[in-house]
Length: 367
Image 1 (cartoon, rainbow, N blue to C red):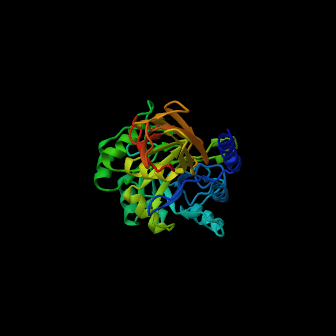
Image 2 (cartoon, one colour):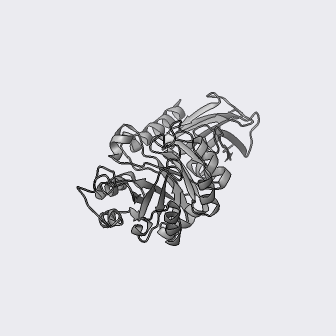
Image 3 (cartoon, helix red, strand yellow):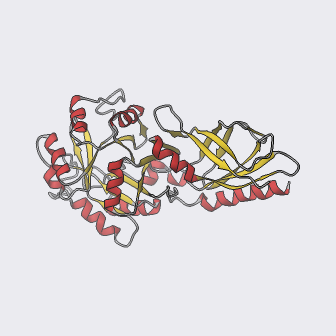
């Protein structure tokens, strides 16, 4: 009974410690730093409702590492009120407000055309003005000349695809073949596209998730009620623009969306394994039942299904581990073992449409 009281105290104390902390937190993975990025957003310099400083302050509150105010190049509804012939202006203003913060602002723009090709973001730009050309293909080519990373925005957007499908057309295939599209949004704002996810897997595109925020983050995602903006977790060697770009080009990303993780299996598994840590493990006195405490050091509230060779003594095969908290598992190993392996299907993670990854956790109990 004393052991259970202590364990419950640990769970409650940890949960309270993070209750009012809105910063998004995920651990570093292997040799990589986990960078938090929102690379698609808007301000009054296109069709957004806020000045660029708000985007920086919101990102700072959320603990983001990189943002990009990707204003529409061709769509400028407030130009009578805020005339600005320089399409780099939003970046320059945002960058000036980022001084003294941990937020790094990237120069980016949204190529805004009818379908095809639809909308695409180009980030790491040197001069956005040079993308204002008649032929959309020329805009993509110019972005690449400047060393941009380009991704297809909201390919399931109902304004351009009323049934919510992804219209993968010959122009898109040519852009992909010519390496003029590097990534695709599987998550945009409050929407998820399993078709976009499958296209990313089929064509080896980088998986992206963004807020595409136009108003306020707090309003849209109800942050103070436990919500969070969608972000792209990028696994880079260091927190620099150059390292971020290399990681994006290599496809080392996982999307954090609506309490779920979405990504390629080779990126998901290391992140989950880094997030779930064996806090302690020991056999209950006079039994062959291992008392295991698994700690979750991430913002993801993991939902796991037991796929191990062992039955759990204190719960069913469905296990929940809240963010920054613990779960207690009493594992029936039949005989005492120096080490054993737990396997779980991670139900709040997707490694492909309708496919959940399996993680393996090594346990070395104190006998």
